[in-house]
Image 1 (cartoon, rainbow, N blue to C red):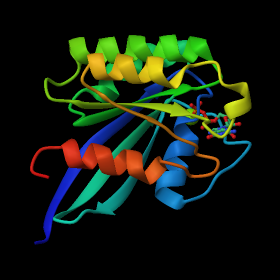
Image 2 (image 1 turned 90 degrees about the vertical axis):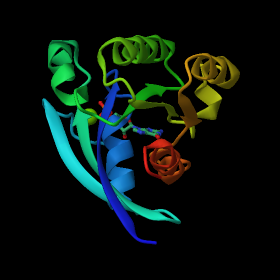
Image 3 (image 1 turned 60 degrees about the vertical axis):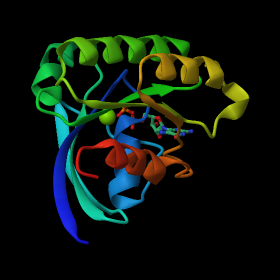
Length: 170
Ligand code: GDP
Ligand code: MG
């Protein structure tokens, strides 16, 4: 079976948590220590072959800066999925991620699939956000949670596959 679907996906989260790096890892399988800061938003696409369907993600990578926050609804409106990213070494970014989840649940599309990504999981020695605490938060809110590393690629493809599985008609 070769069904084809395409979905709008948005990345949200504080500055420097690794949103752009996650997208670049997923789309081009590359990583840059000096990833250029995102201005406004960037658009990329990537196609993922699942067992029973091919899913094309139309990805909006937003800038995390406060001054762009008012623009976020333009990007999450109509989005089938949202990846809310925090940095496991930065508790403020986890608080920021929770506020993005709230905003998506209140103002995003009714059936939006939300995934929380605890990024920079390669920096285990500097961890400040407990995995179980984040997992429990995600479970209580009915969202996906995974720890990822754009740097060593761990769980990046798995995260997008998990999202694809939860999207309608998959
Ligand atoms: P954004 O502002 O959320 O888009 O963050 P960027 O993607 O620009 O990344 C910010 C910084 O974090 C860059 O210096 C990256 O090299 C670094 N970074 C991103 N992802 C990872 C990761 O998984 N592990 C580590 N160690 N550094 C990362
Ligand atoms: Mg960026």
